[in-house]
Image (cartoon, rainbow, N blue to C red; front, side, top):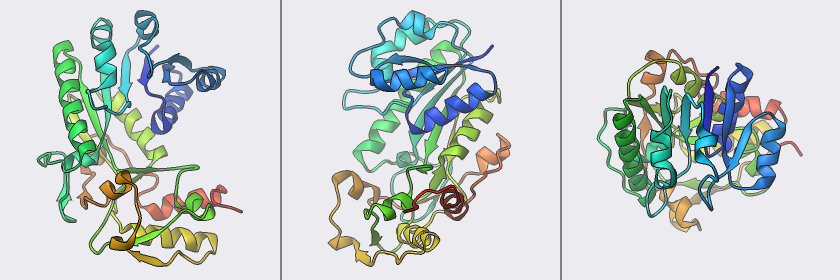
Length: 291
């Protein structure tokens, strides 16, 4: 039986893990708190603590793993998974697939232009530069092990409980107007389907852009979400006047349209939510953002 081990059972990785569990796979992974570990174990997922300290018994935790997913973001001193457990991962026998959740931020700012997986990596933010370095060291490990590595460059992630519908209802949504600004997005359920297709594809090491079919101005997405809820959208706010955290401002520092042909042509994936409209409509019908 295949066994998936996820370093970092966050939003996307947990949806993927539960999908593979439903397909009969053994599933294990890490989280940062005992409370979350207990919840995962109650759902039949082997959970181990990792983050503030390395795995207590890495050989036991990783034993039998055939498929490995890393979704822990890099820090100032490199990739935390490989810093703590590079040799433990190398010692795993029978490993067939390694995957790393990266970001489209590795492409940098293209002023609204198009990028695909063959585009040069030109990150302009500190986060993007860290991801490029992380991709490289994961490639080194996979090459040393002779195991295929798939790097998934994720666009902006949304899904149940994490979307503009919820932000609007909480009074936190804003419509920041920066002419020419567009973002790509991806629904978490489509991320899981793409990862599942890749895990059993047998394809060699390569990156995959994980995004939907339409990069869109963020203010248009908020307006559409407001319409779904029967609310007036927030007023437009010039970018220059918007108060933002350094993280928020870094998102607006880059504008690009990301092509996703590879996930369709090589993985055979047909997106359930090809644009934000289908995704937000389904979330609204499921009750997200309701009073």
